[in-house]
Length: 352
Image (cartoon, rainbow, N blue to C red; front, side):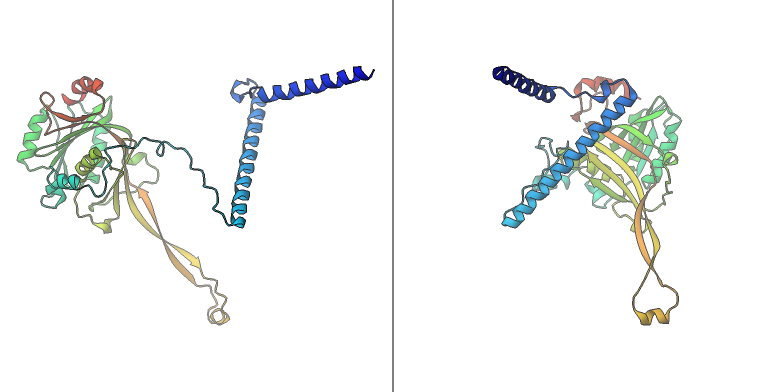
């Protein structure tokens, strides 16, 4: 009898261990695999609750470890840095250093130095491709409010090389060509005059001023230009090309800001203006003499600054950078994004 009881207890313990092992090794059921909506929401809520409790336990353990280290006079454990796309990127060899003398010497002799040294005032010619769309003129009209001293010329049937010669004779410093496809602007071609270079950008995520909620109306003052994260050799060159489109003496009283933010090889454009608002703040002083002298509570004005978007809003992606002015046949390209798509670009963008 005793041996039989021992066998039963051993079998029960083995079955219990087997059940625990099955619970551990059993794959968790994902909510997306459950068809019933009530069961799916219940399982999802349980998973979220377990995740929150696990985070709380980890936070308490970290706090306890920090307090223990402070009591013992030791250094606290290092904080964990979250993994993001930016901090896990491989270091770029072309990133320029602040003490790069070769870069600054090249900048003093490049094609944009005369404009950036205030020897010449920028004068921009804006035109379209041969087949214009409905949103193209609206986008050009807003571009002309963003870029000072910009002039629009209708393209008609003129070739782009003839437009370049005309702009040189009229002393324009740059040409901006807005390309449209299927009634939507999809590319920008910026030609620096008289000796280039020529940059072709893909344009996406265009939002006009009328489609931005609570937008503001810009003034005619010269804007302040902000170029962010143009750190590589190519970025410096594109940044100086964009900088040459705008005057180098902004009128700060106009409270206009134009921002080009480069992130992951995409250039995000925003146009804002400063707004200064005054809010009244109650002054509850505990001085009895002041309370007896003034029956009412004095109000103190506080100035708050904020940004109001003026539009438009769009994203640029550099496709090609060409030496000299526009030349689709014999031009030398100093940078191409994807060489396999190069023939497609020549057929669809450059010949129009």
